[in-house]
Image (tube, rainbow, N blue to C red; front, top):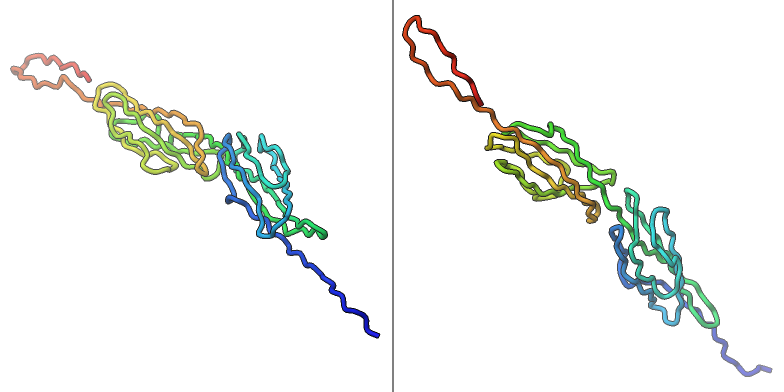
Length: 231
């Protein structure tokens, strides 16, 4: 004897994938992040996330949460290389069977503030018409530099940078009779993050000119009175 057929349902929940409302972030030390909302194409899921914060990143709190990654204010990196906070997030279905999805990763990179260093390849005091040569460096990798040049009285040739670089090579001319200066204000830049400017002064000696070389007309046997040479 056959009984009455009865339906039996098996529901297979999907494996939900976590999505982030904005792309990974990269900020300068001392800056703020943007808030991030977690979502999924699978309806009715819950979220959880946890952050792995490397040593050297300051002011990152909280380190875990649910539906949103909050705004972090004044994240700091006092080191010389970028530091990356890695956030792992997971969506889980709700209902009778809670199915966790795969892990999704979000990163926040905190770039350091580079410190500029300058060293004269030439002497810091040059002759008029010769080239000053200043090598620029930083302990932060891949740092480039921009600068402004302020020429003192009688000095020409010092110009602002037109593109970021790592050396200043400029011919400076002094049209006055006294030593003059060109003052360079140098700003380091790494991963679009500026550092504190430094000031470097180049000194330019004038070209010495002699006077007192007037011709003399004398009679034979007369004494010569040498001219006094001056400059």
